[in-house]
Length: 565
Image 1 (cartoon, rainbow, N blue to C red):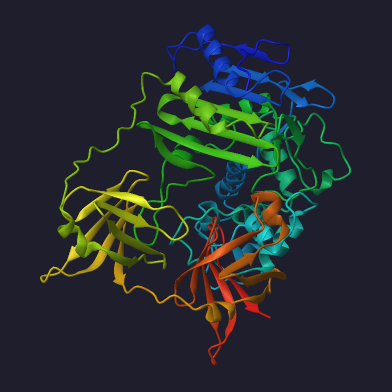
Image 2: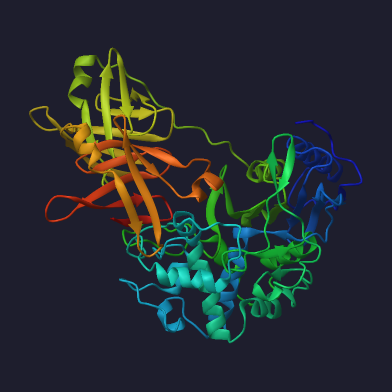
């Protein structure tokens, strides 16, 4: 991509230097941000806007690129962008307003506010929805697996009907954090139930109007017959050019579908530091984790924001991505700094660009994260030999450890093998990703368990025997047509030339780039799919015949059950 410092009429930049949050001069900051943008963007391409605040003060506001390639219209401070999931904190803010007014309690059962809604197998509260701990599957993934296009007309009622239609929980609430767009769609519906207004009306009257966010809109079905004035068109990079990829046929809200301009987002950002609506300290609320899972671990998602650290500095952030659009919203509460960007160009890495700006702004505050220094020992092959074998993680995935000549390898089904390095006689670590394993030996030196450590958690993994691979005749019995009842979706499993293959709906090819995955046998009736589909377990009836299959975990959707036809 051509590296050009963007100083054309397509970019309109305004910088006001405020010395409280940064030591870099205004002129130098502008030049550096231009340079960062130019690494990913050239003249005549779709672009976006960037805003930097130090408390109530605007440090930089910038627009660049084209909002409509066909008409060659440049982006400006009034251009509207779909901020996608970044809008979740606006939905959370609406819920907090109702709580502040005494109209709901965050620990109320959501069914109390959703008349006619089926009950889940466990109680789900408003707080569970806010923190993505409800276990309700995300509707975007449900639509993908149902084979329903993500860029066709989709109303908020369609969204709610899908949640009603597929009302299984992924897990017991408050035992895991798994991101769910469905949860925030339900929060918007709860706002409507409590307020008696359309969600768009409530947000406009209680948030947008008081903050003079005069261009912003919750894009619901009422706008079906209207043009979304001033909105950018979203684009995807295709070959040497760009293809329009946005749609205005989606009308579901709560999880996204809010359009905001540069100036309006600045107004919203100022309200984070100095609230004009709700007297509670909103910055404190969003910045500090306040709740735990059942097992006592901290939940680092507050009210539409992740609370974490970046190079030693506290950061509150959320990103957004929809067809043709990307956005970032980051607050550094201890530094009085806010950085946001909204783009109509999927080809720009918004996270990378945002963090580059943060590195400029907080250069004297950030501490580069240094990997923990590890001492590598060299146990002989005889000492490693007892650790060879297969170990099963709590959720069923099996890890194979093998010694090949002088190298100890980890093999994960469906992935390349990874080299292990010894930190002590029985502890090993990987350099490919951050994980460790410890082999436990009994008094006789026999190894029956391994502790797998990843993401700050330990997983006790028992040793299991090597599985007996199925014959071709046995593999052929898994083939057939499988139907998902609630989604009314049909999948097929084929057996050909010794390989079992699962064929997926057209939505997989359109959005993920593949239409089938080979299945690798792991154990008994459990297989591992290529790509990201993970473990698939086939089920049997009382006569021992294959009667269904279950996709165990595809992230935002778990335990998706099919019946064999």
